[in-house]
Image (cartoon, rainbow, N blue to C red):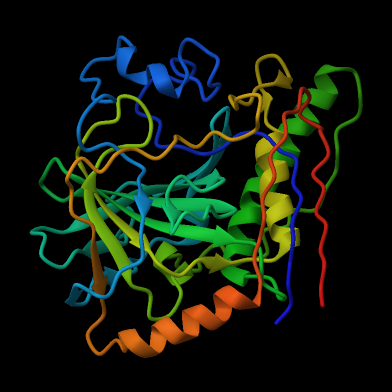
Length: 339
C-alpha cells in the first residue's frame, strides 16, 4: 500500500458559526482565543461547561450493535447554497418546502434529526487514539420538533490514489464561488475578469446526500457534547465515524487553497480568521465523566475489523504540518513519497 506524507502550509477552517463572526479567535495569544472563550460576553455562553466538544476519542470494542437510520432525502445538488466565509466553507440545504432533507435516527435517542448544513474544518478537531486527521466534516442536524442538535462527524484523510467523485462535486462548487469572487476583485483593482470554465460537472438535478461520503461498515463514537465554537452550547449528540473519508492529495490541496484564498468581498483583502499557526480547530476538552459509546451496525464483525484496521494503520500514515501565512496566496506544498 502506498505511503503518503504531506507537508502543507495553510490557513483557516470551517465551523458551526453561532456567534457573530469576529467575536472569537483561534489565535492562542489573542484575548479572544480558545482559552478565553468562556469569558466572552455572549448570551448563553457555555464554553466553560462540563460537556464541551471536541474530545479525544479512544478506540474501544463495540458497546452496542444497533443500526443508525440514514435517509438521504431528495434535495438536488443544484439547490444547495455554497458559501466561502472568513471561517471557511459551508453548504446549506434549501428550505424544507423545496425538498426532503437528509435525516438521521440515532440508536437509543428519541426523535429524528434533519440536516441543515455541513461544513469542513481543515485539521480535525476530534482525535482518535491521539491522531489528528487532515480535515473534519460536520453534518449539522436539528431535531424535528425539538431543540437538540446532532452532528455526524467524518474525518477526512488525503490518502486516496483515485479522486473521490462525491467530494469532487463539492470542491468544484466552492471553486466556482472562489473564481467569481477573485474575478470581481480583479475588476475592482483595474484588472481583467477571469474567464474560467465552471468545474461543477455534476447534474444540478442529481440528489445529494452527505451520508454517501461515509465509508462502508462505519461505526460511530457517540457522546453528549456541545458546539465546537462559541457559545459552545451543550445541545449536541455527537456521532463520529471511525473510518475516514479518503480523498487524494490533490483534492486536499484544492480544499485548503479555497479556504486560504478567501477574500473579503467588501475590501478584496485577505479575510480568513485563522490563528498564526494556521489551525482553527478548538483544542480537545475534558470528558468530565461523560461516557463515549461505540455503536456498531447489526452483524458487524468487531474482531475481524480490528485486525483489518491494524493492517491499514501499519501500512502508512499522514503527517500534517501547519505554518503561519500572512497573505492569502501563501503556497500550499504537497510532497508525496511512495514506496
